Length: 153
Image (cartoon, rainbow, N blue to C red; front, side):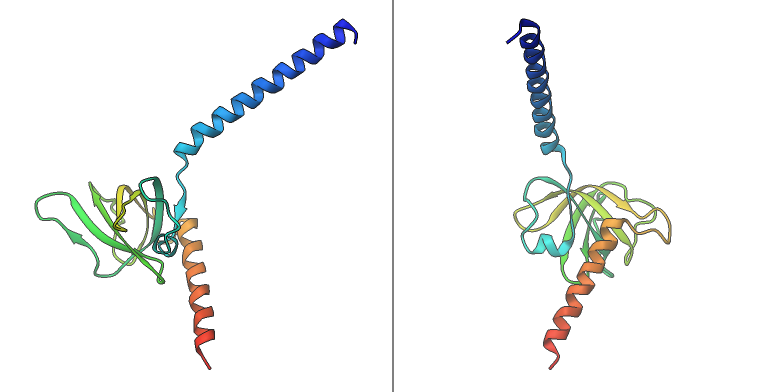
């Protein structure tokens, strides 16, 4: 092999190895920071990781909001109409947070099945629904319709 060709080949191999190493390190770093979305049905089915940072969303169940009298702690239930998840949050809630409205919460799922939120996001106007929540509600409605078809003789 010609020395100049050998030198070019070594440069190309070095560049490929460096790019592979950079991609591997980037993937490893992002793996810890990825914040996946889980609807309540998947959380109830045990598909969501416990103790990892995730997002959950759905509708705030009517009559489920419980506020502490001595702190900013609040408990409420998020539902996709096929399953429910109890969420606990301490902090100031968004102005548009209300029962029967869409919400996305970020935080961690505990062993007992409760979701401890570090952030609560409410829809930003009266007509907007976060895409993840909208998709989760549609999937839930489709699953309920299939179950009703099977149960009907």
